[in-house]
Image 1 (cartoon, helix red, strand yellow):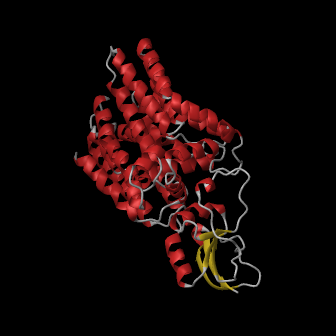
Image 2 (cartoon, one colour; image 1 turned 120 degrees about the vertical axis):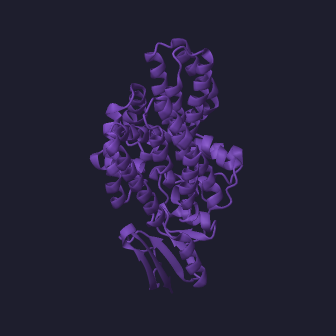
Image 3 (cartoon, rainbow, N blue to C red; image 1 turned 60 degrees about the horizontal axis):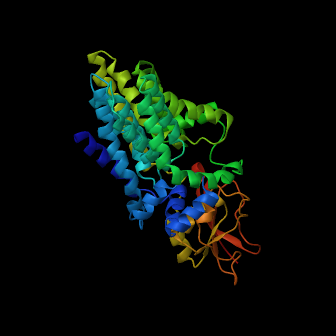
Length: 439
């Protein structure tokens, strides 16, 4: 309970510190539609299942904090599940895994995101606990329970199937063939509605653009993945460097972890990474189910040290984690530019708010639905979530009035002919700029 309270407090700090982000805006704009239309939009445009979005539709989401609380809850729930799993796996200091989860920079960062990734982490923690708790002679009801768990994971995100495969392989390795068969049958039966949606989404997967969030896995991408999973800092260079202080000992801990943990990690992290080598379909966040097992492996590495060294090592890991979590709360987030402040400046100047790049469109549409203009060509195949946006204003404005345009700093501002720039806002480190111009 103390560890869960610690996690609840730490994860709650960042709920309202940043404007709503790009992907978050897509989530909230989507769930403002009726359920039938949400399913239609997902089928026609998305590569995610419907589970999280339907949860968010039913959850209060009128403010960013309300929407993010749906991510905060599963992050907190990961803490007791991780502690219990480490206890049942026989760690000498089971509180270590719980403490590392309660101070996880990844969970702290994703708690402040109205997205599905803390739910994926909770699915990974529940899978880890199931593998740790499986009796020598499980009854068939274990197969039913695991089947429900597997279906729930894939309803959250399709990449959860890799973790589900790890659980099934674990059952087969223990020669629990009937339990494995029941788990697969129950999961398949429960996922039939999700399968119907997935079949409708197949054309989206096949025509997904080259300029997606994901790239084929390289050393740099692997570095970014480590930065997110251990530091909550996928794009921040300082956060990625500091996260190596946790990632490298965790890799050593994987070698010393129980076989069932190694098997789960091989499936939940290893197989998606292998897919990412050959296909640009992997995002670092899709590896969220592996986070509890990775942090448990870090606990194993610390737990293997002599007593005089284990406690200082644990304290150092917690301090690094707390520092990274605080850094994520305080630093400028490239996915969450200061749109509310710029919109206020545009209103004060009587200017039309103009978005020059599609990356900034969802956030602008969240804060000023229908009150902004878009000065970019819509992509042939949309991977940003523009399909969830309400239509904006005409551009250039008619009759002519001032404009406040936002775009990347290295691109020419979308200023109409005959206009003169009178003021500029810039954040060169984030490559985000805004220009106020008038006729």
